[in-house]
Image 1 (cartoon, helix red, strand yellow):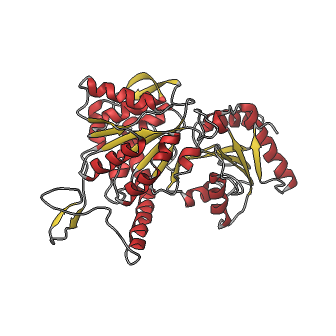
Image 2 (tube, one colour):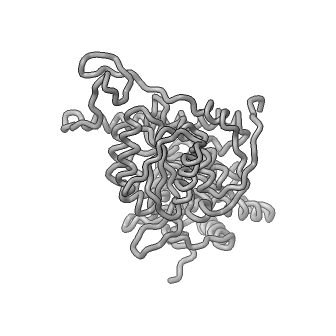
Image 3 (tube, helix red, strand yellow):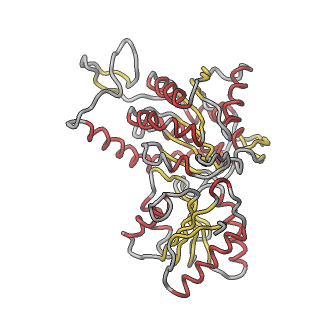
Length: 410
């Protein structure tokens, strides 16, 4: 790649990789409240502020609800904003997540996925971010610390794109990624600053009939997030959906441009396929589990088994056409969910993938595995079992139990 820049390898855990990416992205405001296993992110960033390594206003708030409120208001004044949260902290932000996306504020937030109480559990599953999947935020799930670093940088470009203007979550598995040390290749500060660029604003008409940038400015007074009764509210929501559709085009574009300078890519930015070209059976998953699945796929391939993997990197907006295309020749699919949708007949990813495939020309057999709740380990033996079950489904040409639990004592 002709635009590849020289990089430096650092030993970072996932949280530190996120903080380092935010440090390099010329962020104006960080507002946050600590919560395990996210705390390292804002601790490291506060050190950058204290050491004078960044010119960022760091706001220590009294809660996560206040942290998102501060990020929202800062973003609406034109500031590039960042925060991080997890579990109960993200749940406490629930109200403000909808306000932030509805106000079209491109806040970037790292979510270090953690289980929700009760009972209390500080370890990683996807219950927290999946509970917010309809809040109007872009959601990208990463596999390792390197991807966490790369994705946070891309997230600012994606969220702030004038055809998108939506907040974005970068989700990484708690403890599995957040506290595991890895080699992370980092770009030079100037290369990142140039890539993310200076935040731009669309011009809109004010109530005075003047054209002005869409931000809070005393010289051009305007109201954001006003009351919208039934005669207008629907149209606001439709515009957010159009922005999500636009993001489906912008995410691969930004991902490709980043690959040009870094040499790293993750599928097309929306989906990553692994040994799917001639696969008869495949696992679909999100996050760090993909690394374990890849190892098992390699083992099975060495034995002549046509196994593959589809990793959903971008869950919101959902890449419907890409999922259909990737799985069009697969005969049996296991969708893995690291959370539950109580009473919903399977987990969220299962709902989405099965729904997408309903309209496909070919219909593979689809089975759901709920796994890893509360941080329970999912090892290669578990993944081998999933593929063994898929082989049985291929032989019998039917799915007896569509919703199953992996690694559970019953």
